[in-house]
Length: 337
Ligand code: ACO
Image (cartoon, rainbow, N blue to C red; front, side, top):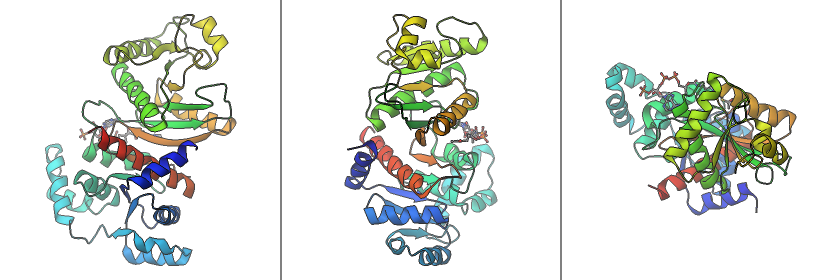
């Protein structure tokens, strides 16, 4: 059974409530219809009920009737969520008027539902930018206990079985932190290893990437990666991690053996941690497009509840997969609470 099939099976066996704030968007509706039909999750669509019903009818999506539809402008819990938002953000200067207006924004409402225990996870981004999806989640749901930063990983299914774990690798951070500090980079490495283990089911071997391997060059950007590796080892002594490594030294056994002799990771890495968002975001897109790899994500790691962002160019299939992933993250988080 492939990874996605096993995640679908796990989601069906333990149904989670997943909220989709872009409820009247065509791809979202089509994915929701399939998810409801397959029994993968309890789907909550946010949007104007009349518009959603009209769209569903137009596209012949009969299963949408079995989902829950909430009108952000008019529902029973509006006051509860307004008060919750005000409580969470008043120290940051939010006024009652601002809270009353933001609570009608589906991206805020989805996070408030999760915070209040009325949903287990959220998927959005078919229409909204990454920043707009993440900001309310960072403000309302916040990071999991003990976690410093939220980051975004991609599970890369490559066409090169000689690398990673039979061609499967995890890349991070490709979505959130533009320029992490050494401490933040260490946190990203630890979270990525956890994602590889708990979601993908593969024992992580983490490479901290740079343009230098073990002192082949000197620069403050390399110092950051070395320091991040040291901090990650200090926080998590059992973690299999090494750095700084160039990408070829991380992946190719012969190059790893010559550039980083004695390293447990060089030539065998299956988790690649990039030093900045630029390198991570560009790197995953190059592997996806030029290497014809399937990139599943970004899977947000470190948030107190699963919120996953979509690319605005996403397909119905992408939305389906991200709901499956969010449901599995939610199941995992509840197990380890
Ligand atoms: N982890 C945890 N908390 C965070 C993080 C983080 N990585 N980043 C911001 N926060 C918190 C802040 O502490 C702050 O909390 P507070 O208001 O309670 O004090 C809150 O989130 C808002 O922080 P700001 O810095 O004001 O938010 P900003 O407007 O900078 O937005 C964001 C943060 C959205 C994550 C921003 O860094 C961003 O846009 N990142 C790039 C996203 C992106 O464009 N990615 C590339 C595309 S994705 C793709 O191609 C797959």
